[in-house]
Length: 440
Image (cartoon, rainbow, N blue to C red):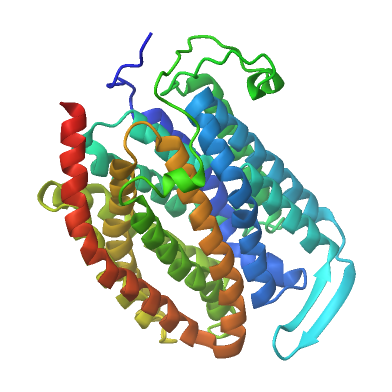
């Protein structure tokens, strides 16, 4: 039996799973920097903490992406979500462990920090979540499975909206739950509960978008994982694809290069910003939560009604060029230590990123074609993880050395992407032509 090209599966289940997953993470986001510093860390430790997840995701995401091509998206999404649950349980344990100093560092280059037992557990928590961290890449492949060419950019925008709705509600819940006498314990327990809820939704309510590929090998991973060969098909022309083959797909290497640079620029910001507003501007958890909530609300507006309208008139490549130019303004504004200017930068962040990022994902999906969605998305996730590792660690080192000037480097990287993105105008025309021929 052959797989049909059109899959009639509603968007709501995958959007709901994505929303709950993001909500769980974003509850912890506003006070994570406070937890790390309370346990003895500094800017460098915070950057390394952030880099642990993508470092292990770099290993796990390509494998999970390939498995999703072979065994189906749903089972691999569930496996990934189970790892997230385990990671947050370890995080809860870290909160209860007494702060025991293992070693201390006082360095002009690395700063002053202590390595404590709770910090080691936090590192372990992020590692467990990271090694199974194929949620995003497999979810993107799932979305590509059930989306036609006409609605591709719009539906990737909806996926981003579901994420940003989680980022709106998460920091707000963190502020409310964290204001109790139990501090960060209640928000972290809420994260565990939400992660479990997402796993239940995946297993019981998420339809399979891609039937598993039949295998004659009785010793394959499906036996190990307890997966059965039910409702499967033999895909005659599909095979496992390696990294070198991914880069042979037309235009993929250039799009993935831009993908890498975008992640790099963002992750300088992700390390530097929380430390900057905590140490230099003396922000509280409430201010941090308000900032993330405002930013996410604006992102929902841009990636919802705004993107839906402009995507009908402008191509993905045009939106990528324009979005990067606008996004660069954000990082320039962060050089200011004025709270009003920083909150004002959320408008440019939301508009630039909200137009650019769904368009990058959409164009990457078009260039990948139908056959290797999971593999290409998995390798893209790994490349983003590599950029995150470099950006988060280097961002911590840079901020310790040059402070807010780190944001200038973020702006420089994004404006490099802006210049390079003009080549996408021609690439998109060819991708659209290829897609039309494939449909015919």
